[in-house]
Image 1 (cartoon, rainbow over the protein chains, first blue to last red):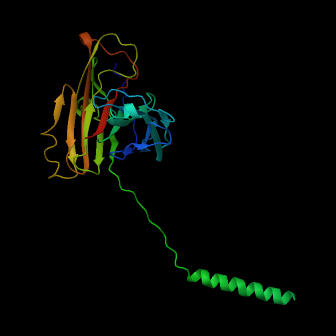
Image 2 (image 1 turned 30 degrees about the vertical axis):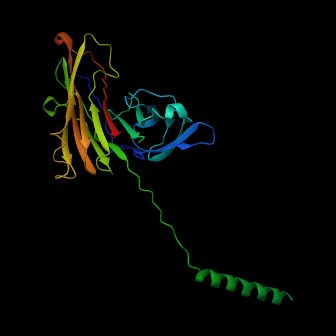
Image 3 (image 1 turned 135 degrees about the vertical axis):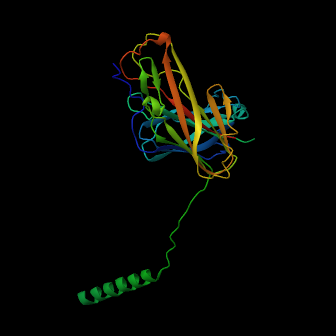
Length: 120
Length: 171
């Protein structure tokens, strides 16, 4: 009767790290376009992709440009994201977040999301 | 002539080698210390099935609560927010409405003094639990989840997956 149910599958300790806590915008080589950089460390075997987002203080998404909004980060590897934003949007940008993308097939059952903050 | 050239070569090599061994070589050890938050999954969760219409992570129900660890390197720089599942991300076709409940509690802390008030100061909004991380170090959180099928109807056989969301947000 009770023959199903396995929810979260087994792994060792897995971690998702993002730095810095407080990134800063710096002028880019393009006029009115500013740039920042964040770094992610993936020690989650069940995660191959991370989604990057820039948000205002209420966590509403803001337009930005990066090479890949959804980027593959190998297990036990660092990845650096360069993020570009328009000067007009920059004043509202409060958070930059990375979120783990899980697959249903093999998963620890925990979605991890880390947000760094732009301090004005 | 050949002997002279060989001699010059030997002298040159010896001189170069000797002077090289006398060089002082600075080996840099560099580091960039920046604040960061680390979310780790310490224990993966499993639903047990105490009866036909209920799935639970409680050990008394045959389940296992997922445990996450959050490490911060700056005090008063982050809050952490946990959202238990409110739906299955994958399941067989369901035969009724499923009601989810969930909770998060501190399981352990690395700084018994500085983190003593974490559970007391927890902010609960619905099923979402928020903790302000006022001290540096590690804190472990255990997450409970229960899914109950409507009308006490049995869950269809198959594999079920649901996710806890752990967010570490800079303050």
